[in-house]
Amino acid sequence: MKAFLRKIKPLVFLLDIAAGFMIIPLGFAALLGDAVMVRAFALPLGGELLAALPVHLAVRNRKAAFAQADGFFLVFAAWLLCALLGAFPYWLSGSGLSFTDSVFESACGFATTGATTVADVEALPRPLLLWRSMSHWLGGLGIVVLTIALFPLLGMGGFQLAKAEAPGAERQNPRLSSSAKFLWLAYSILTALLFLLYRLGGMSGFDALCHALPVMASGGVSTRNAGMAFFDSPFIDGVSVVFMLLAGLNFNLYLKIGGGKFREALSNTEARAYLLIFALAALILGCSLVPVYGSLGQALRYGSYQAASVLSTTGSVIADYGLWPPLAQAVILALMFIGGCSGSTAGGIKVIRHVLLWKQAGNEIRRSLFPRGVFALRLNGKPARRDLVHGAAGFVCLYALTVIAAALVSAAAGLDMLSAGSIALAMTGNTGMGFGAAGPGQNFGAFPDFLKWFYSFVMIAGRLELWTALVMLSPAYWRR
Image 1: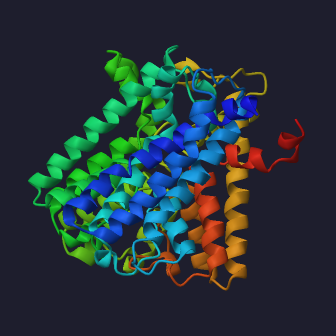
Image 2: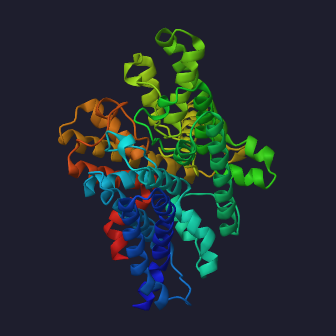
Image 3: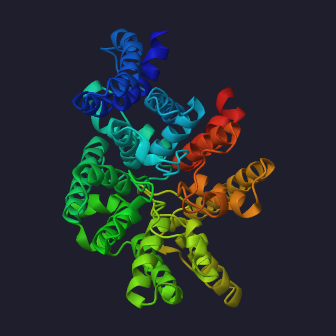
């Protein structure tokens, strides 16, 4: 029994962190004198702490050593259980949300998807809106990374967890906990800076906080029914574009910058490709939207915002792109297939995989022309391992199959093909936005309950880059 408790100690600690963050909205509810919301946060917080206490007491002086296979289980279970735990404040808030809708809202938060079942967001209690934004912020860089930073204090190693959360992640520092602490520091500083800029743009303190938290996490939720469009501010839109792009960059670049490796950060192949894709998409959108908005300046404002939002998988909307010209809609759809950089808060296939496959395709063309030639794959100015291409190809295939499966399930539930396909992309890539039934101004409230549970699983699987979730579904894993 104690061996089992030692193995689940990291999982319990992850839940402790998620529950511990509920103290903030609980205190806010107490300050507002909202007894219902105090209870909505106090019950899950107290219940989790009581359930965790026996585990901590039983293995308080024992180290938790576990293999990579255990890391897959712990990460997957942590995301599922955090989504379930985070659902209780919604369910107990008195806002009329069913338990299914509450789980969907919570899963959207920890998966940083930004979708919702709520038609009137402004009617939700303010402590609940704060928790909604906080859950996105926690899911952004990852509760697992935060835990890695704190694990040394508990005598637990954490590289297996990091590898399970982001397969293939580069280990920048032999002291992983130090790297994790730096990442969270950078993440927090950027969030604080974004909050201050939103305040300068005219947002209230509450609105600024509840928008800064999800935007930095690549989540598109808002305290307003109209979203960011409510503020109708070019300054706020411009600031959002910059920080959405920053959130979609590989956070390892911040480690390099923090270590003084500026040239190495600036020469990063993936970052350059990511910014080039954004610039081209924003330009095409801007040019195609001139007839809609009457001037290139206004067209670029809306086009660049939507390009940054979709590419970083934030999913924030400031215009009804469903009314845009076909070319603009096609660009948005193409961006949904790309996603942000690896090691970022963004979802999607990730730019690095597209770069690898594009370079490999170029090599194959050259090999056809020059059969005896030797063509190396290069990243960041250095030769890249060939197995990276195999991994990228395997992931893209797996990603496509997941999207197809999600689209088929959606179509079987009665959704039209445009809605089914775009929702499958939105759930798998964590963009939270699509076309048709998932377009601007729409929500998932009227969807069947089984679809909401299915989408919740797909969102979490997408957040963990599919491998972790599918490993857990493999019979071979349970036979090991």
